[in-house]
Length: 204
Image 1 (cartoon, rainbow, N blue to C red):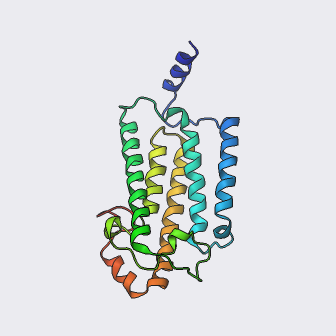
Image 2 (tube, one colour; image 1 turned 90 degrees about the vertical axis):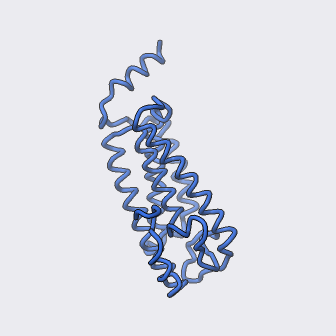
Image 3 (cartoon, rainbow, N blue to C red; image 1 turned 30 degrees about the horizontal axis):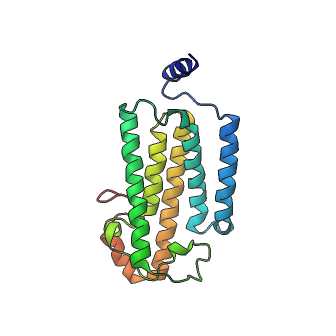
């Protein structure tokens, strides 16, 4: 009976109604935020690096995931759910392919000008194969797809504000990393930019 009441309550919610952040969600948000804070400590000390803005994108994705948690597996065949699962599936493909190419084709070389980078970001050579043949930032693409996939689980005013902010943070991070890569790889990266998109193959 209680489950039926909860289900009915969900169905009665309007499309842009705000969901309250419960104590449990708030605690999870704080815990994961602390984890993100620890791994992003260096970038957060330098607003000029791409990792600074990526941290806030992580926070946005965390909020969207927790905020829409009650609707994650509701009504699988609803249009918004279908779009959501397609975006989330694409997110997994992008990150797996991106990491694979970085590990197998990128090599590793420390960058004195970017001490805030994670180790896997410091490739010795410019990766242009696999998914990198079509887009320059599959890792950010994965985060964008993940964020929008979480947003499509349930539309709300809070979710709309956060997804817009998260998208802005990821786009800014991408443009800053473009400058960093151009400084590191030089003319080779400039030529690479002419034949690829930033986030989505053949689109943007």
